[in-house]
Image (tube, rainbow, N blue to C red; front, side, top):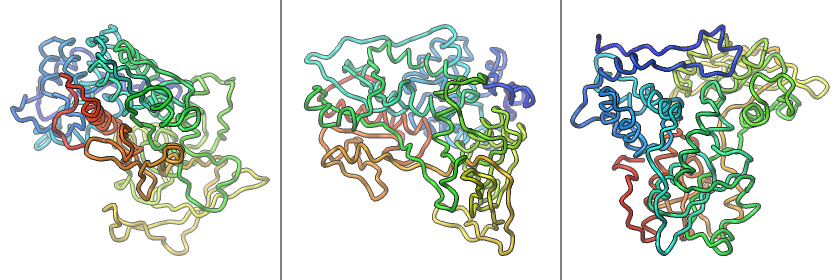
Length: 473
């Protein structure tokens, strides 16, 4: 075995996967997982753990895996991460835990994400649940979780393991938050999400759908009328941004949020006669080059778009998407228009008929550290498109801020919290994208776990629960 090289992970061939919404990455076989696990050096002071926002004992779960103790491996994983089959698929390990791996100095790092996925899949397939409902506190303590995304789920698990009575409120009709409505099934299958949610339910956590907190109930009402001792806000930041260019009000223009939600929640993949139309044409341009943009353009490709295009004002090297996602999009026949800045969406009879662009070049670095795109004079050109999807980021939904008196927000509308994730309103905590802006699934979970620790302190609960290790969140 060449320890410098990682074990390749099987994938669906591009020509096959563009016809379905099945997992693109097939995953390791038991033999492949064993081979890859053997590469881990089992460092005594493992830097990979410091690269994980929730501080998973990475050498520990890999050691148990290579010893054939899969239940122990899963137990170690879920001490810090309640949804390993999810995180093994969607977390950017290449910039977090794997980026710190010692093997990466002179070779390729251990495929930590693929091994996490393997163990998580094994537990889902075998219906393994290593944590069960614990006895409630005396006197009982009730906590409301607003939002069923990754931050809320992580907070809910740790509170439930401490004996707290936890209720999760979700505005939509299905649970999982951005995991369910924001990530396509070919990257994160819905049955995986539901299986992981089922294990959190077994801890006694209650889930209530169709409850938009701030509208159905306000946060003060949850505490004063419904009897909750504390509230955690993990609603994410799902308010779409637009470009403010001419033509954005045309039919055929939609946000990435709207497009992915329609596909994920309203249209069963592969079903032509759906009960909710997606409203997508045959020539689709997605503006942006992050992971969400790649999800949109690859979804459009599977929905039989004749042309699926990415338009981005910077170069490929400045794309914020995972390298794997860009690679998969290229394999699937997506067109890339790098260094192209949108000027105007063209229309006819109220519908999109084109996208006017201008060539860009890279200038000096901006505040983000990336080189600023600068227009190149006399280089305008037009793309023939009938659908434009805007995937340039999100802002906060203002409802919670508007309906919670005394809640401090920063100048961008995000909730301000202290070192325990508590807001300016006593007993109200927050974490995830609603506090930090758009981040990763595992970073949101880290904030949820940190908030759980803060909530237990606030409630005066001394719990022997593995919350979050001393990793900077």
